[in-house]
Amino acid sequence: MTKKILLEKNIARMEEIVDLLENNDLDLEKALKLFEEGITLSKLCQERLAELEQRVRLLTRDSKGRVSETDMAEV
Image 1 (cartoon, rainbow, N blue to C red):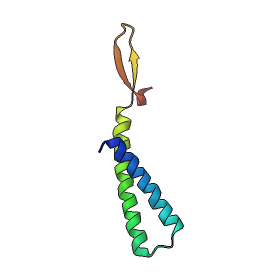
Image 2: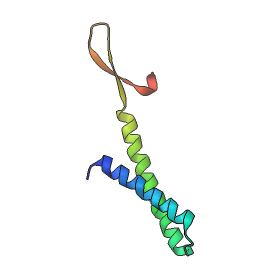
Image 3: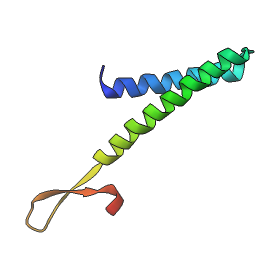
Image 4: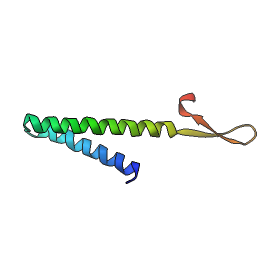
């Protein structure tokens, strides 16, 4: 499974968990299991988004026409 699909599935599952926690009368044990799953998914998504953030670059050409990459943080 590609990382993009995995990220999207994790986000979709987190949305399901939020809906279940907000709109259902769950017993404490079930609610805690869902909350723990959500926290785990959140951490995985944060890690993946950090990876993607590192890859974001602006392509620029210098005065000689050479292509170089510039960190978004430097712009």
